[in-house]
Structures are given as structure tokens and as C-alpha cells.
Amino acid sequence: MRELTTIIAGALGGALIAVVIIFAAAGNGLLPTTGGAMSGETIREYLLANPGLVAEMDQRLAAQNQENQQKNAALAMEKIGLSAFFDPKIAFITGPANAQKTVVELYDYNCPYCRASLPAVEKFYEEHKGDTRFSFIEFPIKGPDSIVAAKVALAARNQPDKYIALHFALMRETGMVNAQVLMDNARKVGMDLVKLKADMEKPEIDAAIDASHALAKRAGIDGTPTFVVNGIIHPGAVDDATLAQMAKES
Image (cartoon, rainbow, N blue to C red; front, side, top):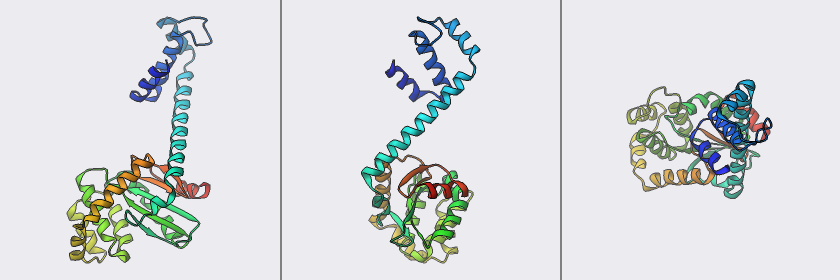
């Protein structure tokens, strides 16, 4: 019974999972309305008489999934340690070294949810760059253009005074961030393009991308953006209120 439910849960969506569970429970005589197995028609009548049950189960399943994800993320962070997200080999790190607050973002320049989070991230950065340690980690998962974008951004770290300006400029793009867009933005923020292109070819660039993917895998991170605020993993897009609350609660 449990194995069947697990298999179905992995393949189907919330409300449908709830219906499947109800049918399985009814078929095994586990519903409170019967002492034995229920027929398909009886189950149908039961569901029609209790229309809120599916939605309730759907919500409960979603809450349980979120709780399990949070527990797994907490266990991963306990095992990995926050310092892994502040490794200068994979992260652009800025802010006071002794800051009590920390914010990490794993992102892809072609991720719409990363772009949607930019106003909140940029505002939070400007307001807290004096009291918070920030880590910006390239996590390209949207295809070849994103890999190139990550390489440019990694190479841009060798011109650290221009990196943040380039990062935010790329996140403001509305179309695909490709090689031409990358160079145009690098030029606009005043980067040395000859040095930038040369630095892109260094072996440590590919190594950094591989390392960021390996770290994400260890942490159970598979999407962008993902934030790690004061050591707690928070997947998904953020707005001003959400990011401020995350920083307050963490």
C-alpha cells in the first residue's frame, strides 16, 4: 500500500494523488464510513458527499512535502556547512567578513524567476552591503547560453570593482543573455574586454562551474533561484517582503 502510494505520488499531481489515495484506502476498508472494502460507485458517492476532502488532502500533501524538503535541506546544510557556500573558488563574496547576517544566491542569468527576484535582491544588497556577507554563485542550468554567461561572470570576478554592476545589468535583461549581450553589458560597465575574454579561457572557470553544480547536488538544490539566508535554504523567487522576512526569521 505505502509503496504503491509513493510510486503514484512521484508521477502525479496533488489533487489526483489525493483521489488515488482515497480509492486505495477505501479499497482496503480504511475509510471511517465502512467496515470493509467499498465499491467504485460507493467511493464516487463518498467523494461527492465530501467535496472538500480532496482539497484538504491536497493541501496536507503539499504541506508534508514542503516540511520534508525543509528537513532535508536543514540536514544537508548541517552536513555541508555554510562555509561551503562562501568558497571563493565558486562564489563572488562581498560584505564584512565578520557579518552576523549572510545571504547566498544561486542563479542563472536566463532564469525568469531570478530576474523577477532582482528588484528585491538589489534593494536588499544596497541596504545591507555594510552589515551582511553576500555570496553570488553561478548555477547555469538553462542551456549553452547560460554556460557562456556564467563563464563571463566568473571571468569578471578578476575585475572585482565591476562585477556587481555587470551582475545586476545581466539580471535586468529581458531577452536571452547570449555572447553578444554579455559583451555589450561588460563594455557598458567599463570592463577590460581583452582581459575578460582571456580570463574566460582559464581552466579554473570550467572547474568553478563544475564545483557549483557539485555543491548544489550535495545540498539538494536543483532550481534557480535558490537562496541561503543565514544558513537556511529557501528555493524560489523572492520579493522585498519575503526576503526581509527570510533574513529576520533565519
